[in-house]
Image 1 (spheres, rainbow, N blue to C red):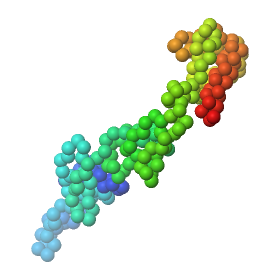
Image 2: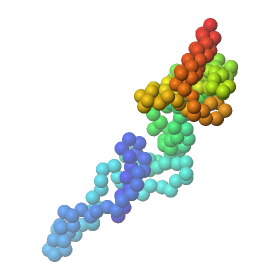
Image 3: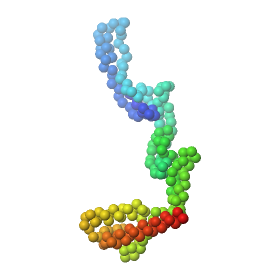
Image 4: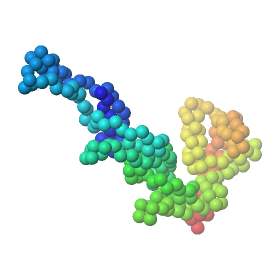
Length: 218
């Protein structure tokens, strides 16, 4: 005898198992078979059914469907599932899901943002335009600065990348090194930069990035 599990939260079909015979009822039936008392005949075999399980077999499904057990009507209901990307409302980051639409967390939406929007408004059900992000995207200078540095190489990076260069510089100092290697925006590696040259690049990158920030703020 098979038992069919469903989840506690959404009652989705969650798998099947072979059920164990109820050992207590099995012992009683063994005694009934011996005594053959017409007032206490052998009973049909009983099985131990776990919680959140049913003896009713779920229906066959298409690839975009899920079976959910209705505990009141005792039938399986077929529902359409959502498969695809959902987006975190606070920043637009995405993740892939395969679930019922009702199971998508409240902090996510199925509506895709574009690169210039920063957060989702639940009232209007739209992404709110980030004017600062749009400005930098249109001018192609979003959080990016450039500096003609070592041997004419151009170094570019977001403010996070600049912080990463600073962290590498600090590690080099702690290790007693006097040079540091950096990749330029053309994909060339420069392994002979002195720490003074690295400091100069960091300073210029920050100056240029701050100037772009001020340009927008004005």
